[in-house]
Length: 498
Image (tube, rainbow, N blue to C red):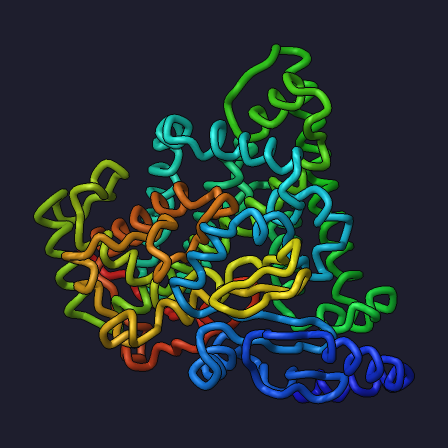
């Protein structure tokens, strides 16, 4: 971050006088803003962000309170770390805060922000996309119909681990579950495997999606200084444009193939692509192929990364807490039998496994913050004025580790949920890894099926140990933070026969 600040100062030297004038004149007109540290000219509070912004903001929250104001370059940012304030924003004043997103500059690549259900304003196109996702893709009936597919993909994961078990080799558990998540989504959307597909098409798609994730997680000067948008000094938007084009080109080929099949064999409804094509045919003018392709891309970006990351964090925590692993294994053995791959229907009979999943999502949420919101007008929250167009970040990471909300919050202790009605579905604002309100993550129902399914099957079909020469205490729990919170170093684990 220090090198970035130096680069920022040098890049903005030519505009120093102008920006100082704008900075100070704008501040004179601001009244009753949330508290926060005094910003420096030009860079604002960027020097206080660091490489782990969620931790930096949490520390500042302990000084200034649960709603703080930061000037990150030229962007006013409001950080929320209180469930009551989060509830006011996501529920009571949801229309003001959910209509417009704070769009990172990287999402301007290939005009992604104009078509994606994640980033477009809450307009008629967004309502149509949400309707498709909620009723045609992630509805209970649709998920039930695809249950056999998820079970098959988890069986393939177990078979992969079984080969390592036979020869005693270690597995990068994060890569293994990422491949499973990717294949599940590619089958759900396109009816084909992407991680093990025989052609280069799948590899290109997977690599392009991963490169988009990597580029969008890097600090970008343009997000702090919009005046640099035309320059794109770090080349992030330029690189993302190249990756977007690769993905969209592959999608164009898959869509063309499907359209030819539909022309020859008639209309059908077998996967997500068919559902989108059917909707476009039945509702002309509501959405187009651009909306479909960019929203499908977001399903891949969000679905593979968060689900696989949660499972990886879960395996790491269970390795570090053998007592919890043993208790989970005992429950699985008693309920479904040792060595079996669990089904989704089994999960309802495995309360301790469900507690483990909640605890994973509490202490290791998929993202450090919910997707940024921009209020459409000045609005008073908790006695403070949140200015129109400011970036509002709700810190799921801080909420999950708040000692006033959780006893011993840094401990991984699933038992805290055994006699608790707190859930992760957007009703309990101290635990909102998927968000809340009308822009809650539409893929939440799928994630809540896949995480316990993969995690439970892994721990019930094998015993696990560390790679030779390592012990559980050696697992590096360092976070790599961007749009999501990943393990910086995926643990090497060895599956052993039961």
